[in-house]
Length: 84
Image (cartoon, rainbow, N blue to C red; front, side, top):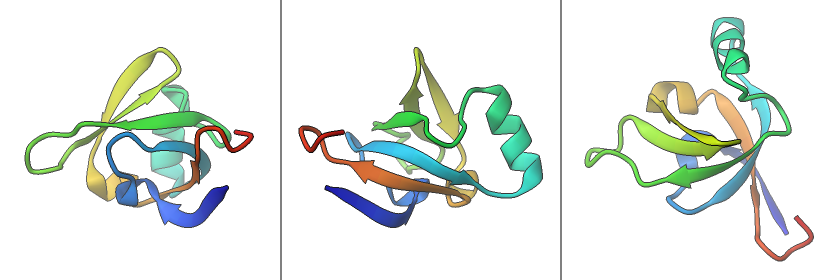
C-alpha cells in the first residue's frame, strides 16, 4: 500500500519513502548532484532535537536537509512487505 500526496517534511522517523518530485530548479539541481532524484528510495532518520534539519538515508549515505527544502520534495510512503 502506498500513501501519496505528502512531502518529505511530513515524513516520520523510520518511514521508507520514494521520491516522486523535487521542487524548484535551484533545489532540484543541488539535490540531483547528491543523488536525490525521482524514484530514489529514502528512509527518514532520527533528526535534531528541534526537528530541523531532518536526516534521511539514501543509497549508501545520510543527508541532512532543512525542513523548508524537505517541504518542496513530494514523496510516496512505501509500506514494507507490500510489494515494495
